[in-house]
Image (cartoon, rainbow, N blue to C red; front, side):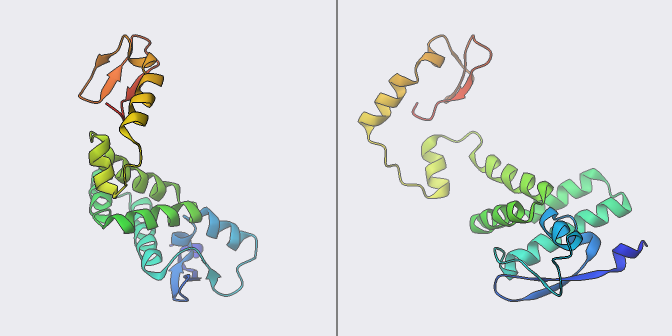
Length: 179
């Protein structure tokens, strides 16, 4: 094992819980990497925007992906692991997005955002509102107005599904949120 894989660093969550992590695992975060390399990490590295529950999940993700890099784990296995990892409640998904963004862990940010995209994919606007508990504050008059204002891409469009259209202008593939 390389020297930096054995070295440990301490991370401190927003709720003051500390986590001792292998440096190589923690360095998957560009934010932490810059703190360590910039010598601004004396003692525990404070992560004021990440709770201990979410930091534990982030560390779990980083450890698994570090093991994959070191052991050359099968891509199918890690993809299956990622799928299981994301079987959490909506609140946790959004907290993981915020943490991945703050910590600059691109692969985790991609995974969490893809999870939200999958939650939306193929759903009607009403179903999306229901999924995310979003109140529809657009009146039917305003919906009609928006539909008229945005009709031009759909004038010669062919439906791909009940709410997605493709125009003869191949640059326009658009979901219809008011259809």
